[in-house]
Amino acid sequence: MQGYGAPMNYPRTAYLLSLIGGILILFLSIIYALILAAIASIAASIGFGFGAAIAVAFAAVAILFGIIVLVLALRLKSNPAGARMTGILIIVFALISFIGGGGFYIGAILALVGGILAVVWTPPPAMAQPGWGQPGQWGQPGQPAQAAWGQPSPPPPAAGKVCASCGTANAAGAQFCAKCGAALPP
Image 1 (cartoon, rainbow, N blue to C red):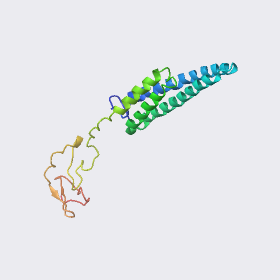
Image 2 (cartoon, rainbow, N blue to C red; image 1 turned 120 degrees about the horizontal axis):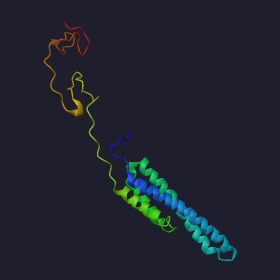
Image 3 (spheres, rainbow, N blue to C red; image 1 turned 90 degrees about the vertical axis):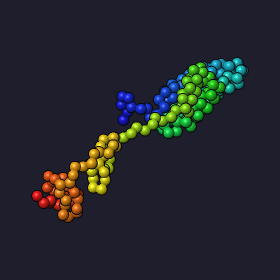
Image 4 (cartoon, rainbow, N blue to C red; image 1 turned 135 degrees about the horizontal axis):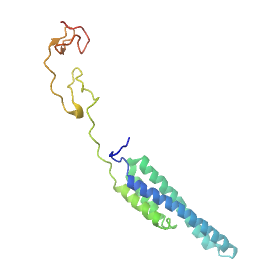
């Protein structure tokens, strides 16, 4: 659970930039492909369809790369342990997407910066856990008691009664043994 002030456990900035870059690459490449397809159909009717067809193919490749960058951006959030490799792949596909227009290059640049940030991202250091509920905290037999945050607690008060059944030292006012539950002498 992440709350206010909790450390980010995934490369948030890299994720957001790559996601926005992938959306721009995809959306603007689709628009570019539609415009080129219209031009290609007009050019084909007058005999110049080959050059426009190549431009449409480049736009289709840019659409594919936009989808790949989007998937890789989502992977940054779902698998932060692989952020370095995912960042490298985002960089590669962002650079290649420049061929097809790259979302008028803005999307490719955003994805490129996001990929670089993913490569250099390091997970935050693990925070120390409190001692609550850890073994030995409540003075279980044979283990030292611990206070909150893992610090040793002061030694228990001097034992008042010793159990005849198991030999465990108990508090002076105890009526039953803390270890075996046997009745203690008054």
